[in-house]
Length: 230
Image 1 (cartoon, rainbow, N blue to C red):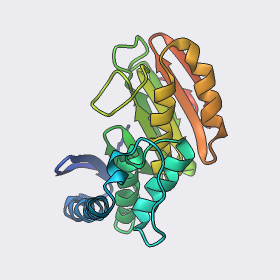
Image 2 (tube, one colour; image 1 turned 135 degrees about the horizontal axis):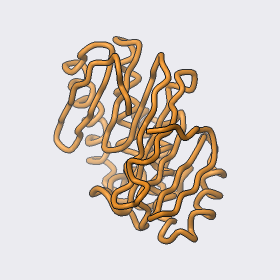
Image 3 (tube, rainbow, N blue to C red; image 1 turned 90 degrees about the vertical axis):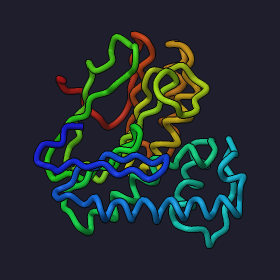
């Protein structure tokens, strides 16, 4: 993500590793926010271990923390387990809290991005060994933010995926939803012939604004985004 004019900083807490860009260095505040939201999730998992292990949606109590309900709702919409939305949820909740201290914030959490920008920016797409990797970029218009942009891959990284796609990119104002749907769509794509049905599914999920699929030299997309030069 191009972040000209912003101050970059990293926040690491156990498995959570955020790259944040904001109008000021808010690393101390962001660190406390990560600790807080991780604690909410960890404490909930202690009471409901299935929340961590399930590969299918589960119901959560009405008095669960908002971040937990956000993950559960996203999982239900996508048809995956709630932990498929954890990175996107942390990005969004940390990012929205930081907006109390800065006008512009970009939070990237392992490929899952929350962005609120006052200027148009662009984001490159890394797709592993695909010949299209680092040859595609999309415009991120200020008017469309806050926005979630989440990437899943069956060939890159350590996250669980049952598919073979080099990159699945989902756009949504709900970052947890974008994360969960990226996982579901990624699970559906094992060959280039799967691109069409995966896009069809993404279109059916309320709140999804766009999808890009890269597998090998295959490319497909739908929705509210614009390719721009790298």
